[in-house]
Image 1 (cartoon, rainbow, N blue to C red):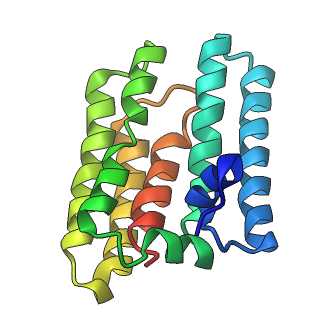
Image 2 (cartoon, helix red, strand yellow):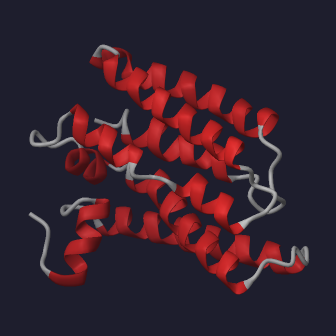
Amino acid sequence: MPRSGVLGLWDRLVGPDATRGEHGLVLAYALSFAVGLLAYVRIQSLGWSLVQQAVVAVFALDIAGGIVANTTDAGARWWHRSSQGPWDHFGFVSAHLHPFVLAVLFETVTWYESALIYGFLIVSAALVLLSPHRFRRPVGMLLVSVGVLVGLMLVSVEPGLEWFAPFLYLKLVGGHLTSG
């Protein structure tokens, strides 16, 4: 059962029975990725505003941390507990409206490209959830590989955001939906 307060919020992200090692992996990767990304933005002089940097840093923490958290044993047990059904998983994935936030913040991220990234995410979620349980992981990884191609070949990526679509698909399609 999740703890109360701020620690309870954390428990709901990584699983209430996460081990010290699982907490460490999630935090270390999320923080190092976000800090490294912000350093890259500054070193490359990408000219991002403080708002752009702050929002992308939060997205980096969320997505990079989620890639790890969704695939830990504790995360898999928590997110795939008996009270969580297909609609809960679909709702969780659907709530990731990040591509549209990027379209608001960056002129070079178009609404079409955001809809393409999000649409592929939603279709992928439906395909994984409609697959027989034994095929969810391979179907999920197949779709992640196609999603990487979508993100790299069909979307003109803002410098500094090259990671975004592939990591989003890894977190949600390859991780969250297939780890249970």
